Amino acid sequence: MSYEKVEVPEEGEKITLEEGTEDELVVPDEPTIPIIHGDGIGQDVGPAAQKVLETAAQATGHDIHWMRVYAGESARERYDENLPDDTVEALKEFRVSIKGPLTTPVGAGFRSLNVALRKRLDLYANVRPTYHLDGVPSPVKDPGQMDMVTFRENTEDVYAGIEWEAGTDEVQKAKEFVENEMGEDDTIHDGPVGIGVKPITEFGTKRLVRKAIDYALEHDRDSVTLVHKGNIMKYTEGAFRDWGYEVAEEEYGDEVISEDTLWEERDGEAPEDAVVVNDRIADNMLQQVLTRTDEYDVIATMNLNGDYLSDACGAQIGGLGIAPGSNFGDGRFLAEPVHGSAPKYAGQDKVNPTAMILSGRIMLERLGWTEAADLVRDAVEETIDSGKVTYDLERQIEGGEKLATSEFADAVCENIESMS
Ligand code: NAP
Figure 1 (cartoon, rainbow, N blue to C red):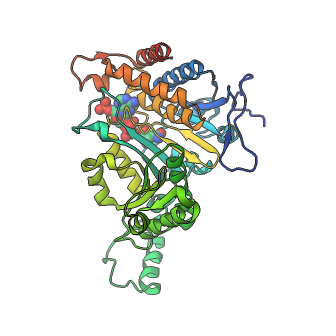
Figure 2 (figure 1 turned 90 degrees about the vertical axis):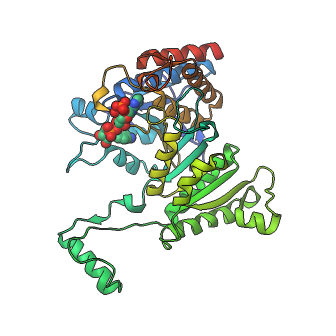
Figure 3 (figure 1 turned 180 degrees about the vertical axis):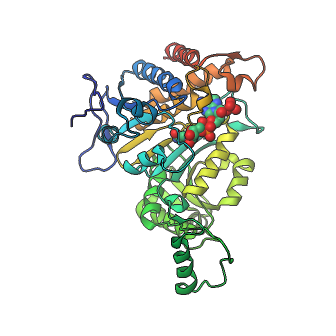
């Protein structure tokens, strides 16, 4: 495929799919990887992450050939459009990529580019690992107990965007349908009302839960917890739980066992290496991550619960400057930090690039480059633990040395080199 708005580097090979599979990547030693630096502080954290990831790749016998692609402000400046088709096509064709934050201005007429990208690439699982790095200040007593990965469904739930504004003909029709056709004539109060629809499908649930279980098996995790509010929303969140258990019980043989079967048939004793699937009600889960943190491992949940839960977990391990994220689809992957474009700090070489670097670490894992991924984590941890930190952490710890974004990246690279 040839592109007008993307320059494909001459060196570097394309990541492809193993024949006959939908999700197994064939990764050359020197892949071409698209990168969107992003808006605002993307210009600071993007190059910093690039440098660290490249250094870790080279230290472990690989290399990365970056391919700059454009979205948001940089695309508007160059091509007078927010999201060129060439950008989307390149992300599809090259399969594994990384992006910085993209601004979504508040107000009508501008859809979130992040949402558009996830939709067009069908990246249906938003995956956020939360683990603590030594030296990172935390509001909890023992942040080291947190080591969870949240799989948040990305395409359904109240986020599907099916909702109608108070005062419109559409909302009136929806209200009449609910009252007259569905017999709920005493439920909605009189007066102005907004109405939304919450679709949870068997298809959407099962592919998300499969991804979470596959991840747990591949990464030697002990459990997958389905988080839902099925006691109240029985046919949406309750269905999510039921379909989730169906996947666990019907598709994995002895490798996966549900908590019920575990107690009914095995007296609570899990078979060696098996992943246990259990479920928790969402409000209880928000307590459990604080009070019984180390009991949770991989979480599979719907869009809204996932949003709340992953931010709550992220706060426990150091907040936005640290929190990495990623999006998985079948045979496609896009890493992105949880934070936004923080425009007030743009271009100041000031903010913390850790979230973007650790998002890149998930990308290295997706490539199967475990050694490089571990090296990145260890080197970031070593840097922070030695007190070399950016402004956001420096203000919370005593005796820290405040570094610029680029200096922090250099310090991590030095640690990678001395550790490898
Ligand atoms: P934000 O950009 O995440 O920034 C909020 C605050 O978080 C910053 O002022 C800063 O706090 C802290 N922060 C964020 N990133 C940091 C970093 N790398 N290092 C240190 N501190 C960091 O959130 P926002 O201001 O609500 O959103 C700005 C724009 O980003 C909006 O247009 C929003 O739509 C967009 N956004 C994009 C994404 C994405 O691309 N995936 C995600 C979220 C938001 P202090 O000032 O207290 O130091």
